[in-house]
Length: 428
Image 1 (cartoon, rainbow, N blue to C red):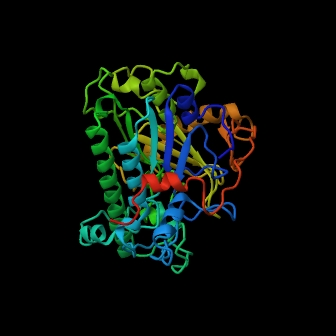
Image 2 (image 1 turned 90 degrees about the vertical axis):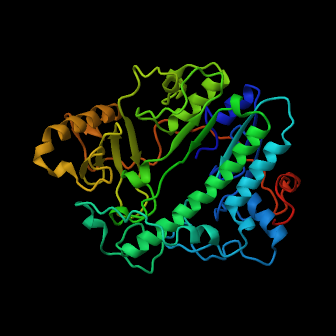
Image 3 (image 1 turned 120 degrees about the vertical axis):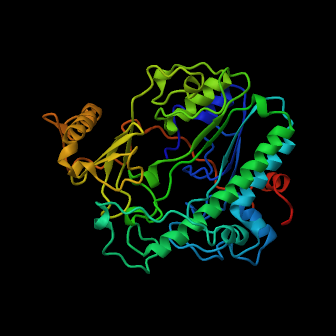
């Protein structure tokens, strides 16, 4: 993340008169950057970019349990293993994030409207739900890992003792165990979200509040012998996006829409709902308010996705999908994948290898050519995709401007009093 962006949602809403507050994982750089939030209380997992940084969650944890280890469960941040949380549930970071959000909403008494981002670190690994939720799914019938007819390349050559492995066949039992814990982690978040909604309703705000429930990525959980994230495949890229709009929006509730949407739509959606004037051509995303109001004409036919290489040997890729078909092209070696997500939602069959789907493959390949042509010859030459092509870590629009980082904060941060006000003084 750049230190400063020309358009940042919290800054735009702050300038429009909103009180902007962030709770949980922001993943900013530097870590105490605000990007328009007037205040943040952070849970950054184990990420500490500078020696003096300590997250607000860890400050709170050590104030209550100075002799305990917040990572006592013993599972890493990109670990494929699973285990019940080893400490009292009230010390879990998911509960902390929910408590801070609930207490913020209960205490809010400012005149201006607020923009609140509640960012849960889980269900990202570690897969460590509280014991009661681990037990809930202990014998649950969960889907086994999807293993496609193209997945064998990811099964071999890994060490099972490397718990941070990004690929490997560790057996069907491990995939099921990880999934059950993942489900428990999601249920734990659902409980916190229910608590948050209850306070919003109790305070009479439900009908004039825009609520978006969204994730940044999924988790492969052993699908196609892959673990973690950063892949073009459904486990990694398909995420929930649920919108509850204010009563002032004239739209039918309970809609399920199949237009392809993406994270870039979040910023214009909030600006639209808040009545902040802007031109949509400023942004790559579009306001979801168009869709919920029934204005689907002219909506994008597909979305583009890409990722630089994250793990050694994983490769980098570009993809297009309309939610029904998906085309993936690896810029590292020219591999192609084509999936029919309607008849094959688990991506078991790569149609790019099937001559019966040659025309569909040509159509989607040409769409990718058209999409990447604006980047020039390193990506497209003579109307064809280039491989290998540049591994783009940053987009051409990545901000070059810099700002003075906020001063480092001591282990006893200036946010100490705010934490005391917003979270319980001791586990309940």
